[in-house]
Length: 356
Image (cartoon, rainbow, N blue to C red; front, side, top):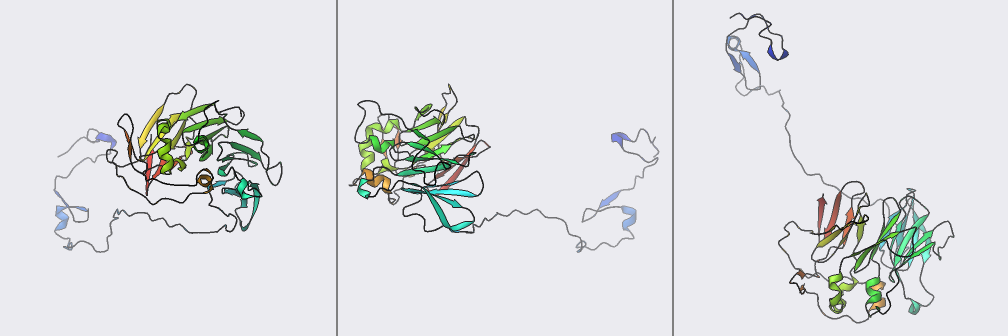
């Protein structure tokens, strides 16, 4: 059968002036040959053993952590904070009474830059709860205390930073002081925004956003545990009032987040005029609640200052609206990705990743 070569060249191909109508046969390894040629070709029944085709396989990536260096014998109490400096050479570690400055390459020597230990330990009224370097200024860092204050210090002032550059604290309302005032005012975590302009702090009841250029008071306050205020006595008896919740800011600074009980975490809009307030549960099955009674963790000096006697047991509770909240399941640790809109939450022995 003869065909015009121009009409037979559809799809942009070049067609021959004549086509053969002889049938073709597909071979075992993807080859194709004319039937007329197979009469003279002897093809092995099992295929060609030397021909190897690529095969796609899946395997899990196993990560192994290896300790490269140990920085030891510099703290007498449990370390509550570690923060890298923007210079890429140093970092700080903080416990209840001291903040030490380390060089990444020197593990056997550190410099004590903050020391709040009194001569007589009976005079101790305040401890360090958290510390973090400024994200861009390598000479500045902030640390919080159990009295609800945040101090901004400049390492260029002196070797031992006994004095602060700025003090951030909110004044008590007249007549509002009670037995629990100082306990719930203790700041458990402090974080700088990515641009270094704002500071986020977390106490037991609230999140507070501070402008480092304005030390008269926070620019925003977000209520997290206000519904627990009538139950402060119960929280004191089961030690839940001493729980240390972390906080974090999104990379663009438009949202803040912190954890709560029943494996819940809350996200607030931090921009001017924003009313965003979202509550999410860190769970694969949000409808299912498993109540476990973990072993009671040891407390640091923060709770020892405020309390001598401990009694009672932890148990799930129901509020006046019938909403249950479980003090034994708590989301203490979370972190926001510095550039992507994703957040990681640690609840019990599980890590949950959320992306919006």
